[in-house]
Length: 420
Ligand code: AMP
Image 1 (cartoon, helix red, strand yellow):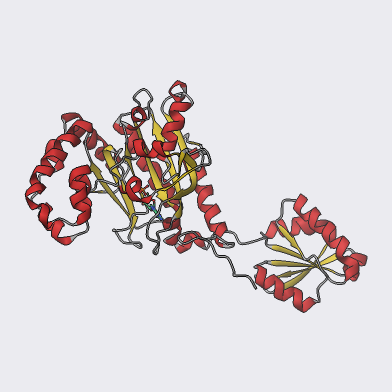
Image 2 (tube, protein in one colour):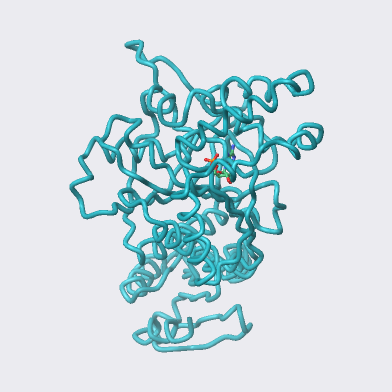
């Protein structure tokens, strides 16, 4: 016998009934984001490698060591997208979306790929639900985006949300701060881990979110980013905070929050759920006022977020999960071969009336049929035997109440609908 094939390490199959939960989450995202004027964009899964090198940044972990990059048959370097913001910004430039009514509001739902060490909540193919608002630099955009995000999470019945917020300043304040931080850390180079040594050259800000206790202690006395912020950045941040307070979005300021992607400017944020623990954010995002111009477009400010759908679903509140509708609630069972044709016909009539129906495609004995209904999670079993067909009265077994009813065939659809 040949060897059984398995899915690739770090990837997984999503199977029913779990896929119904994924769909329900996506339906909520579409509804909530749609109610703020966001529309869906679907970008290709592969892009030229250059997009992420320029967009996400050469010094980021993603570009440095996590990308699935390969040459195609003509030797072009392609990469499976590790995130979606750079692709949305590329599409914005490519399709001249500056001419669209501003700001442009887009959301996406789809798989992303990173070569990371697989562990609980971390995959090599994972899924993100994200939104981007491009073309407005004012603090009200930040506020509306965050309020929308919280509305979405509440629609999934999350209550224990922890919103962490920071500002990383504009390009100039970041540049000055990076120089000061480098100067402060340089004398302690020998005490830094390998990652931080490397970041000292490439991107010193990233050292701020280190998990290494010795480095954290050292950073206690490091210069604060806050003192390098321009007046505009400060004002922007306090307007964002005021807005959040007005909308009763509780948040905490996290001066060391910098996020792993190079394109962020000003507002950055993460949200975690108490269930997952503060270390593991279910989503992250922020402003990226320099990204569009980095990709060759005229400068356009933007802000967005990416929710890790896998993690979100891992910690989804039970109250949402249990409300997700199971498979078809009606099972039509032919009792005896001669009733098969009629059973199929009856099921079509019920579907015409808007019901979800599974039909047994082989005649069953009553006992086997009831066992199947239980396994399929059906609420009603509609029995179609010769006597039912002759009398025109259909027998329905209600699994929820463990009762049995008879109803005229013509009224069956209405009967079921009124009870569902
Ligand atoms: P990022 O694009 O790095 O800002 O990540 C945004 C969110 O995507 C994170 O908060 C995670 O929830 C999720 N995420 C990132 N990488 C992975 C991964 N390898 N597996 C699962 N989820 C991930």
